[in-house]
Structures are given as structure tokens and as C-alpha cells.
Image (cartoon, rainbow, N blue to C red; front, side, top):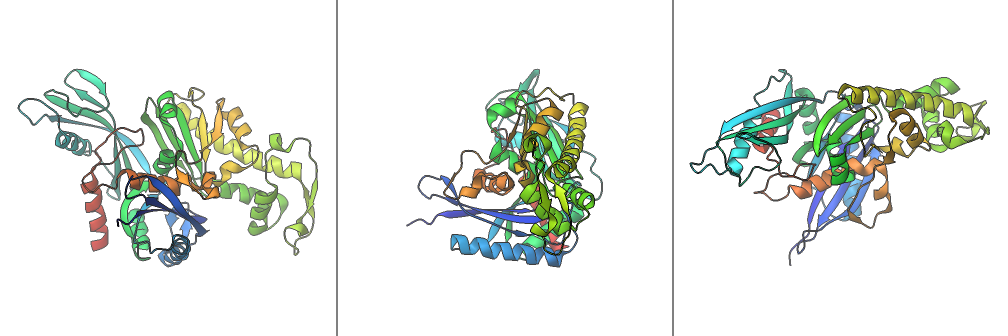
Length: 414
């Protein structure tokens, strides 16, 4: 009797580590999320590892919880990589079609994507993803999938996503020290988009905004293509810091206040309730009004969204994305945040949750699990050993997996 295959996704954030486990039915190949676990993340700052020892211990604790939940040992995972070190650039590749009859095959697409990698990459960076935007065959442009077509000259416009080599090395080392093999490294925002965005949204034009603890990631699609990849060094922890300063309390109490009473002014309405700090921490004295707390939170939310909108203006898409903005990450659940987003971006806004996934676990519908679940979905799409990845706009793309594996081998050898 065939055994069900398990696919694990691990999302290592600044404050929380989350692991999702999916089971692939041996007869139908259908994916079901059977396990979700999370725990405190230590040794990570703004998506960058500061202490491998603390990160390894944090991952090991969450891994143990996940294994108990699914009743099986987890041996490998698709891992998310994030942080403000992630950068992107445009590139082009051109080749001559190999076959005499001019028919384009998979190896031609592989070669043209390899050619697109011939870009100037800083010495301390390496390529994580090669995402084709469109192909051209001779004089025919805007081709999505050239396989089976005929021509002499094949060209691709691609998005090259790069990461800092030292961070990749530290991340892979920390994960492997916990007993995980690494199936793939995926930029976190791409995994979130895999789980939450529909093909229609990507075609119309949409901005995915993932608000993490210390960073805010931006991913913009239009006509199914990626228009922008950007990571800003500001996130939900800055809201906590503002609360701590504004209410003159410690960070832990400020975080508890944000979770229990946090909202924006639009969600608060006319409430002027006074909250005693001793209700949160008996060692604290004094009180604060719900209105004042909402003013602190809304000011920082507006600032973060204004920074995002500045990036949208840089590509001429401010106020011009018909599918609007989709928020993900734990902070996306903050009451009233959508209203602030609609006002600042002048666009429709919604909260992103995993779509089209089977699971009996209720919290899978929470926006904080979009990256972990998206990693499992990514792994499911790429699980055939002889297959090639399916990119996040649903079309075949032939990412240079061999190049990524060479990078990982170099990391381990060092």
C-alpha cells in the first residue's frame, strides 16, 4: 500500500517561526495541510540571522511540535528566505534555437534562462530565482510559453531575484543543523503569493503586502507578470515600539496591549475607554485611552503604507491596480487596518488567506500562515523529480534549479 508523501514548509521570521506540513494523497496527488506549528524565533533580526545557535534551538522546538502533530518525522523542507537584503533586477537572454526544424524544446528554454543569468551580481550576492516575464520568438513578442513553437531566435525578459550569500549560508546551515534537508529555497513573498493570489488578480494588477515583525515585503503583479519586488526595513515591531514609547511601558507589555486592544481610529469608532495598565501587567501603573492607542497605531500604519505607495509610484502603479492590495502577515488582522490601506492607496484592499487548500485546521485561514502554507504548495507543484517549477502566475517556467543546487553545495562545502 502506497504511503502518503509529506511536504514541509518552514517560515523563519524575526519574532515567530511557523511550520506547515502537507500530505499528498498517493492515489490522487491531492494536497491536504495536516499540521501547523509555531513558536518563538530567537537569533533573527530584520530577517537576518544574528545567532545560529539560538535559531537552531528555535527551529528544533517548532519542528518537534510539528512532528508530534502529524505523528511522523520530518526530514526535509521547503524554506522561506526573506529580509531587506533581497533585491531584484531585470535581465534579458538571447539564444539561437538548437533544432534544425526550429521547434523550441524545454532545453532551449533552459538555455535562454541560463543566458539571462549573465548579469552583474555583487560579489557577496547570489541568484535565488530566475522568473521569466515574457518570451520573444524572432519578431513575435509577448509569448508566455514558447515550447512547441517554431523560430530561429529565442529571447526572454526575466526578473532576477538575488540574496546576500552570507545570509543564505547562515540560513541553510541553521536549518540543516536541525535535521532538515532543504528541498528548495523560496523568497517568502513569492510563497505568500502562491497561497493567496488568484490568476485573475495577477492579470488585473495587484499588490501583495506582507507585514512581518521587522520588514514589509511588496510584490506587484500585472498581466500575470511580476512588476516589483521590494523589502522595506519596517514592520509590526515598529508599532510595538511606538506603543512602548507613547504609553511609557516595556516592550512585552506594549506587545500585549497591541494584541488585546490594538486598532485604528476608524475601527475604534467613538470609544474612549480607559484601560488600566495593571490589567495587562500587575507591575505596571497608570492607564491609557483606547483612542490614544489607536492614534499611535494609525500614525505608524499610515507611514508604512505611504512608504509602500512610494514604491508603487516608482513603477507608475500608485492608485492604478484594479485588484487592489492584499495584506498578509499577522499584522493584517489588526482591526481597521484595511480602512487605512484603502485610504492611503486609494484602492480596494483585502486580507490574504490561503486559497484552494484542503485542511481541517481552523487557523489555516489566518493571514500569518500564508507563507508557510505557500511553501508547501510550492513544494507540491515541484515535487516531481523530473519536473520543472511552475511559476506563481500559473505558467511553466524553467528556473535554473541546477544553479541553485550548486550554490547550496558550495555553502555546505564551505
